[in-house]
Length: 274
Ligand SMILES: [Zn+2]
Image (cartoon, rainbow, N blue to C red):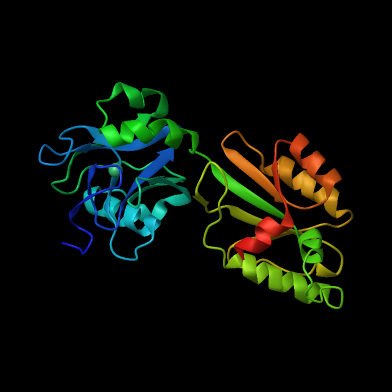
């Protein structure tokens, strides 16, 4: 099926690219291995190895493009992919987005259409042994560093207290409003991603303690001290391939979270995303 974006264009750096509105590819990983596509003999970069993906359609989100193209070109069940973030390469007005995600269970994957010759799970350490499609070879070092997921932990009392919306009259109502706004986040800038889709956790205390989960937000109740619960939550969620970010303005809490390996961000950063 031919789409509106399916044509060659020249980018601001003078390259010729496929995709009038940009292009996107999928870097899906599982257990340290990444799924690579061997391009067909008839494609650009014949028989080299790269990512499944292709031209963006007009107004299409990068994640949608990457999953749609991968489903067209391979047998991967893309509904099982958990997107963690997007890395954007700007070629002067033309963009290539690498969508990074993982799978809970490994799948056997084969090629589906003429654009692919083969599909293979390749351990990250062996990727550079393959004859890589040159644009993928150029992006691989950065992409490899992004084989991670992000968790965002919100110090609810602190963030609530930093905006002047009458929270002191109704802490439960203010915490619920904040939760519902966070629930609608469609992506936030969190390094190494240009746009990350973090797991969202709000630590709630006091009169806001009864605020429950939303569709994309999990709440953790502090039974005693909010700061202790935040530090405990950081310790619980920290792992080698996970970046934990804590949103608070509390200097002592920032210090304690950093000591557990977390990154910290101020309330203003979060409020600006809402
Ligand atoms: Zn270019």
